[in-house]
Picture (spheres, rainbow, N blue to C red):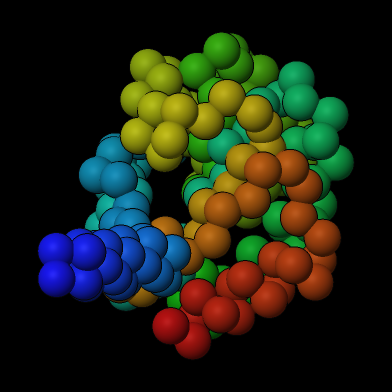
Length: 166
């Protein structure tokens, strides 16, 4: 009898653990409540997306992959801005503000650019250290995609389309 009860207890615990794992894998975390200041002085709370899909891209002017990815981000922003997508490029705390401002001017970045001067935004998003690292936040304020490294055009379109649909 005791071994039968033990088996039942173990089975119940395994089912509960399986349910918790399934929930963790399917539930989307809320975007962290972090505020950044754009180069134009605008304050942006990245967890309050106001019904928009937000692509948050952590980058650096000294990152070859980031520089390479910028034309794709520009093209994607131009295609998706009318669909309710906002792009916020967050320069890492080690990037010099003058370098970021020059980069924005040189490449004519049409989207919002901020500098994470304290490193708080990178920490809030899971201690981002590698660039580029991107997060997509859906209209409900949930992080629905994360990418370390460069997006391919197809990957980025697919991720944004899924976020717009959720």
